Each structure stands twice: as structure tokens, then as C-alpha cells.
Image (cartoon, rainbow, N blue to C red):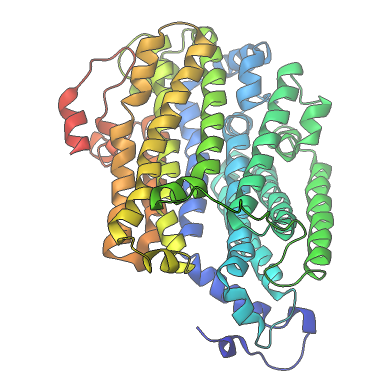
Length: 514
């Protein structure tokens, strides 16, 4: 692509010249990623009312759920407080925080991809040599995030309108607001780092911090009034109280934060040169230890492995700590018990809960392995692989370094998750570790498909995110909707033994490994 492709007609503000063309280019590049992420998030939300109606089919059952949740600090920390017993209010409670986190992650990825990634690869310098305004790239990136979040808001509002138009609109706008707060936050972070990888890592850490602050606040208060909850944008989302006497003024917090952060990002963008940052990267040691392609791959991906490991350990601790109370929360609700058993196998409710939570972490680990495998694609398209391959390093040897990190890293984070479960639950250490490790064949199948796409059709390698998204959707939504077995079997996770509590099925594991 040449810089002249971005030439624009005279007129408009000079600072934003070329924004429309850059926006069209960004949307074309993300024509797979945005629809997949938005569809997964929207379907997760829109499938919930039907699930809840099947689980709690009477006002008395729903009132019991609200009462039990209010007295269970662990579940409030995990999901948040519930403000009403209508199907709409329970939907906002059950998936609101997680849908908001997914919107935040997508927005962060989009902004970093179209700002710092472009500068790091050198493409932004080429574009800037044409008739393109100084802030056009940042504006296009933020508008791309606006399009993605607006699409999510429209789908959620239309899909939940039957539960109450006002509540559906509030939840849709709240999710879009969370997304834009983190989009503008990512725009600021991108000005301070020279590395797109570091920008993504720091912004993801801020999303995690927002979740932790909200969880800490909700565990201390059953009405979302804790100061820690109000510090987090995810806390604002739940305090919007969709379907439960909406607090429309909370939307001003999203608008104000996005506006202030956007102004700061624009000001910073105008004060630095393309490719530079306010916190330049430190030079490496004079005598490095990167003597092999594998050592370089580890150096590039060690931060990601560490971050995922910490996150999975903490998730294991939280889910393990909830295990003792899950039987009390489910109570005598046969429908809720059936959902857990479909996700976790025909076993006791405790084992079924553990199996379903381990399975959920396995689905999320598939995202890690895809991202790690596609690092090969990123290194190649950014031209950083070329000087390595120009030396006495073969392509297979170079690729093997990253693939070892991807596949072995998946094993590490699942092992660490098992240790977290052991710490939180304090029982059945061996079976829980086994349940975590048995997820690896399915995770590796998804990683293998990513390798296949990259090796055979590099231009569509990013479609591996679509594969991971489809697997995630089948695993999360399928059991709740009692999807046909033929649909569940489309996912490699549908063939795994349900541990702990179920029988070990070596045949399926061996086939998946093959």
C-alpha cells in the first residue's frame, strides 16, 4: 500500500485529514475480528434470558436466588450484586460484568492495533508521509472502537427489548460506555510505550485491576455502594442498574471519563514524533543471552506467559473458594443442577461445578494459545523475522521457538490454574490438577488449527481468532441452551472427559492429541 492511497481532497481540519480513509482501512482489516468478538459477546448476553427462565421459572425461585446471592459475598465478588428479580435484571447481573470486560478487551485491542502496532511496524511513518493529519490515525482507531461498541449496544438493546426497552437500552449503552472508557485509556497508554506488546499488556492489566476493585467492593457490600466499586468502570456498569430502576446519570461517568481521557490522548499524540514514546524502551544488555531463536521467542513472550499464569492462578483461587458454597446457592433447583451437570458431567454438584469452571478456564486458555501462535504472523508481517532468518536460522527452527512457548505455555497456565483451585478449595488436589491438564488436548487442537492457517494461508491467519471465538461460544452458551449433541461436538472440548467426578476417557484424549 502506498502513501498516496491516503491522499484526501482539500478541506476539513488539517489535524484530521485522511481520517475517513483510515477508518475504512481499519474496518476492512478488522472485518473478521470485530464481528466475531461482538457476536460472541452479544450471543452470550442474549442467550441468558431463556436460560434463566428455564432455571428459575417462578417468581418465588427468583426471589430465593436474589436472597441467597445477597448473603453470599463470594458470589457477589465473582458476578456482582443483583438489584431485581425480573429476568432482565437477572440477565444484567449474570453476564453484565463479563460482557463489559469483553467489550473493554476488544476496544483495547482495536486501539493499540491501529496506533502503536502501526507505528512499531513502520507503516504509520509511510502513511504520515502523505496528506494525513497528525491525529488522523488516533481518531480512526477510536472511531473503529466506536463502531464495534455501537454494534454491540444495538444488538443487546434490540435483543433484550422484550424484557424492557429502558433496561435493554441502559445495558447496551453501559456496555458501550465501558468499551469506550478502555478504548481511550488504551490510547493514552499507547503514547507512553514504544512496544505494542507492552501497551496491550498494561491496558489488559488495567482491565484486570478494574475487575479486582469491583470484586473487592462487591464482596464488602451487597448494594454496589462500596467506594472500591465506584472506582471501577465495571462497577459503574452494575450501578447503572439496568432493568431495576435505571440510574441514567451513571452514563455521564462513562461519557466524562471517555471525553477526558480522549482529550489527554490527543494532547499527548500531538507532542511526540511518530514511532517515539514518552517512556522510551531501555536498551538491552551489552552482552545478551539471546543466542538461539527459542531464547528470543521466550524473551518476547515471557511477559504474556507470566500475566496469563498469574490471572489463571487467581481465577483458580476464586473459583476454588466458591466451591463449598455452590450447593447452597443451587439448593433444590433441579434446572440449575442440570446446567452444571451438562457442563461438568453427571456427578455430584460440587464435582460438576469444579468440572465446569475448569472447562471454562480451558476455553479461555484457547485464546492464549491462538495469540501466542499468531505471534509468528506478527513477527513476519512487521519484518522483524527477516533479519533473523537472514542468518543461519531455518524457518522451522525459528517457528519452533514460538510454538514451544505457545503449547508449553498453555500447559503451564493450566497447571497453575490447578494449583489455584487447590489453594482455594483445599481438597482433591490430585483430581483437580488432572482435570486442568486434561483440557490440554483440546487447547492444543485449537492451537494446531492456528498453526495450520498460518502455514497454509497466511493472509487469513487471523481467522484463528474466529475459531477460538466459535469454540468459546459453543462451550459457554451451548450447555445453557441445551444445544444438540452434534453442535457441542463441533468443539474439541465437547469430547473431553468431565473431570473431576467423571470417568477418564483415554480414547478421546489420544484422538485429540493425534
